[in-house]
Image (cartoon, rainbow, N blue to C red; front, side, top):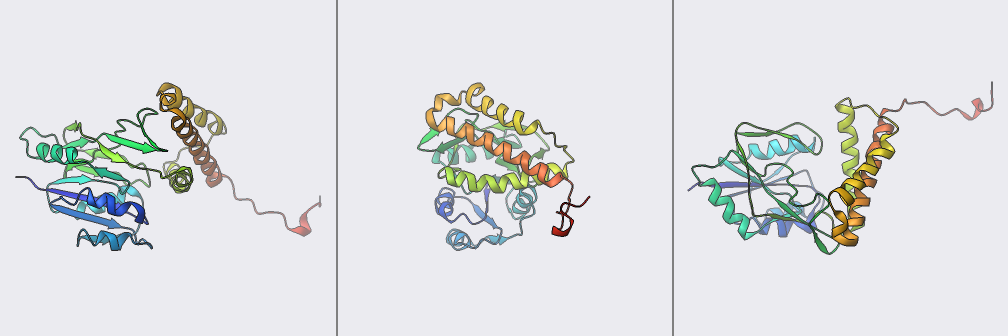
Length: 262
């Protein structure tokens, strides 16, 4: 019977911690990697496991690799604090890891809840982001600040049972969370040497809205679909505005004495 290590990375997410960890309390090994939270995140985590580790945040890719390194079993499942594992997902996880024909990594569909409804469109379902179930030594995250990619040495499969995700409590929570993510994404683009072009402030947000609301049928999700598409367009605009801000030449302001002189 194969055993499963579950890891959760966390930072100041007290409102989500208990429900998240309760949904994976059945794990053979439960690991929480915290980045020195200042709320009750660590305290709540220790109610569920002794394996709570503190790591400085140097990007999500590195943090996830550090979490995987703590895993004691060959199979690893990752769950974010705003996600919940359902009983159906638990059953499928154990069925897969005990199968002689198991792949080396699996994507898990995510079912997202926002503004009072499950979002079925906008590209939010099944919302495959990255493999969440994998053999420990067959997957490694790339050392990227945010929206980290990955490398898999082996085969990839797809599970059917979804994880439930509650990414944003309301619009204010979205704006606060995306402020941090747009900072990280702009820094990542600078690190990767990606250039800034003025048209990106117009074309990229517009395309994001059209893609989510029209091409991915966000209009079928009613008002939450419209709001979500608009919020992602706003995030895209802010991301490129911050990229411009990071890349623009640093020119000191004129001193009061220097103004008006020729």
